[in-house]
Amino acid sequence: MSLVIRNLQRVIPIRRAPLRSKIEIVRRILGVQKFDLGIICVDNKNIQHINRIYRGRNVPTDVLSFPFHEHLKAGEFPLPDFPDDYNLGDIFLGVEYIFHQCKEDEDYNDVLTVTATHGLCHLLGFTHSTEAEWQQVRSPSSCYPGGVWGKEAAPGPCQPPPSILTTPAETGPQTCPWKNDSDACFQHRAPQILPAECVH
Image (cartoon, rainbow, N blue to C red; front, side, top):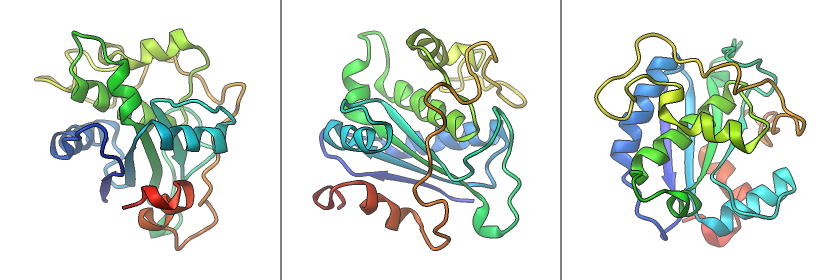
């Protein structure tokens, strides 16, 4: 199924083709290439707006995931009843925030891919409850020996270590605001979340 990547910001340049090819590899490794996935790149102002509305935190962040299938257990695959249910959900990447959080020795595009993969894990029911757990999840080596971003991709399904990912944390899973809207598609969902002036 389709992978839609939209860039709704102009602060940080985004190389969509490499991001797309790396996320397609991740989708194949995870066995979810039959499901639609939306990745939306936004700036600090908009990720903060989304974070405030849906998580009650008025600060920018790196990634927010909105699962189409809300009650998956960690690592569980959705079992769609209808063709329209072959959808994992949407991942909002705070690319400006991610860019400023990169360390000198880190490649921004690799960090962006790792962060998108992290968001994808959330769509599959994985969560983390502490900053230390997030930092461990964020490391490509925690999930992919050799790193999927470079030369070697791990064979078989990639399962983040259970010790660092748990099923719904104290805050609970984020709720997809379009769950009951069967006609909703990415082009209709982004304007509902973002201020009108930000959707180009």
